[in-house]
Image 1 (cartoon, each protein chain N blue to C red):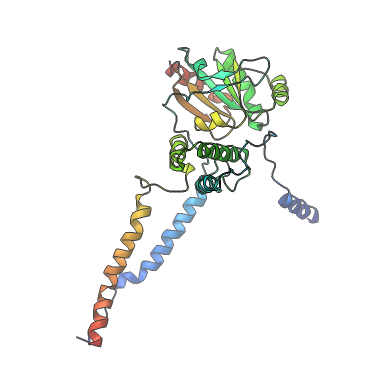
Image 2 (image 1 turned 90 degrees about the horizontal axis):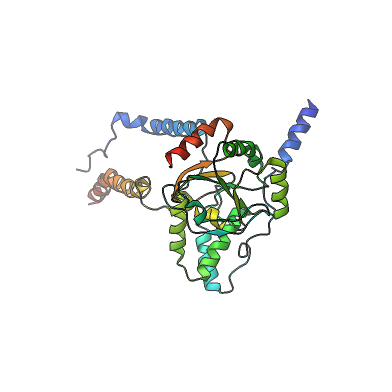
Length: 183
Length: 139
């Protein structure tokens, strides 16, 4: 019994460490090559807007509350801020959507009234209502993680779609289609 | 050449410009709760919640304003008597598992929990001869 060889590994097992190493290298290469996606999708799509009431962020527009979305007509909810650089690029696109008959409500995140007035004066004001969210409370409640983001809300106040980042001119037809689908 | 190097060096040392707001932080972003037990609970939770814009930091470690707003909300809710796990669940409901540093067992994460058990079982299986033959040679 004592003369038995200790269990001998089969020949192919010799290549196992190398194969493992190759697998590891492949994993690293895939991770490096694949473009990084840092978008965090809201899990609130398909759910009703949470209840909120926000005071007016600008003098020339009323504030915003959940009830303002329960009008029977789909609307956009734009999350923006005067300190947000891509929001400047998005302003003319929102203006075009408004021109095509879309109602756009907005929530201004952590914004001073004076800064916001200057932003709206310089880049235009396509908004029907602008609510002020000074502590990102509504932003957190709808699962939004940055500015700008735009939500398609149907006529019953249910979130139907989330667009992360600024809306590009070529994406206008998509947004119009999504609004139509939300009818 | 030297100019290019200097320019590269200057670029390396330049601080990134973040678009950020100038509002004062939320009330409880940088202030501890007066009750130490509640603050301990809040701290433990904040250390396991992920910052949404900095991606590799917890909200306890981040100075991003949205992280400050999350801390303030965590402290307010804990002061109001809410259970930390209920707050975590509320956030997961909005941002998915991404927001929590405490992984749950799910369709995507079960290998995390199963792999160590399987590896220990595999090691025990591979080493079973060693254990038995060792005692036999001594006998």
